[in-house]
Image (cartoon, rainbow, N blue to C red; front, side, top):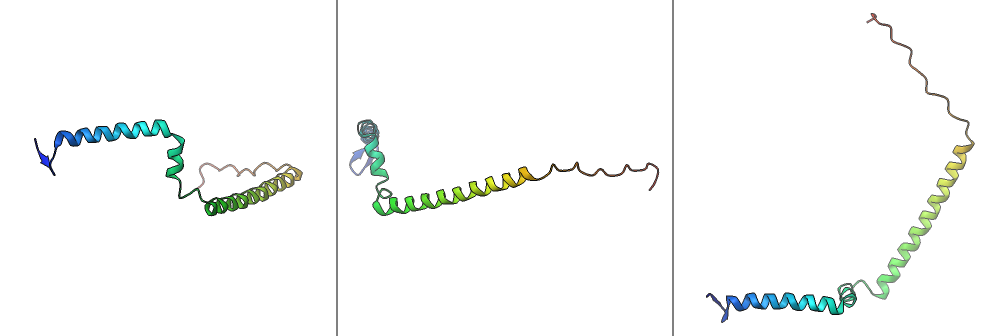
Length: 96
């Protein structure tokens, strides 16, 4: 067996397995709380306030765009039906 800092290779593998098992157990017991811990930097009052302001701006922009779309559709519905596209005259065969 190889030795690394006085710990045998087998014990390193056992430690890795124990660590994985402990992480799984923590995830199952704490579940949603872990997700909150992982996003703790994002869940601040300032960050949430900025995100809310951005969402409000986007909502205003979308409302304006919907109004423009409705206006364009209304104008388009009042236009007379378009004429069929002009057809090109038939090509005469034998002329170069």
